[in-house]
Image (cartoon, rainbow, N blue to C red; front, side, top):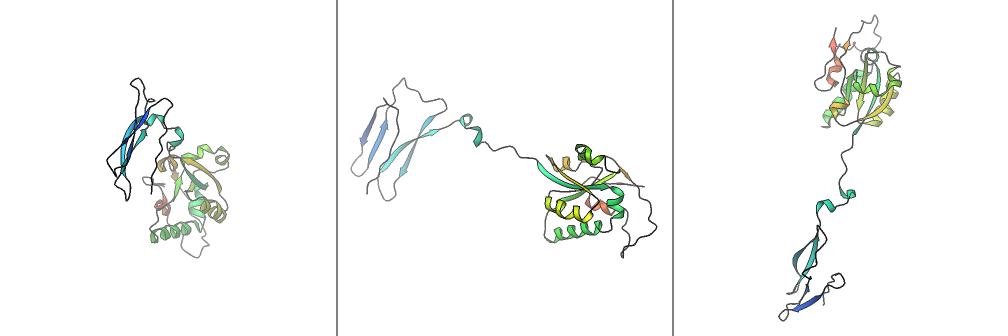
Length: 220
């Protein structure tokens, strides 16, 4: 069984072969003229590889490339901003009037805990990202509350339909802190004369379990 190797050289570069002792194979030697230089950033590195099942060895040349010669297409792109989805309405509706909202959020939080899944939804009181949506803010009573999540289908296909009287959109942010940033706000709800739901009225402040870390709504 014979083994062959090929080596590309520039025209005019002399090559020679050297025979080793019996059974030792043959080596290819590339002779470079003294005035010949390799392209900038390239060098020759010798590497010896033993052929399986043979006593012989061969020598090959490997080109090394400087990092500044790597094309831009091989450089990993910068991390893209995360996308966040939201539904928003006035605080009175979201936190005090919508009978099923609290139940839906606590049930989802419980489900995440049982599955050891990281929370990906939050309530934001007077979110700063609303400044990017003038067509939404002009239709909102203030203060406003947004339900924000990285789970688009849950927001757009479920919560928007479930809550009904909400506005919805999406935005991008470079960090969670940026995405959930809020403006100072004071919440004050008038006591309802009649509560028609078959379960007790929510306690004021129930939503604090879903606020971003470090956030807390003011009570009056």
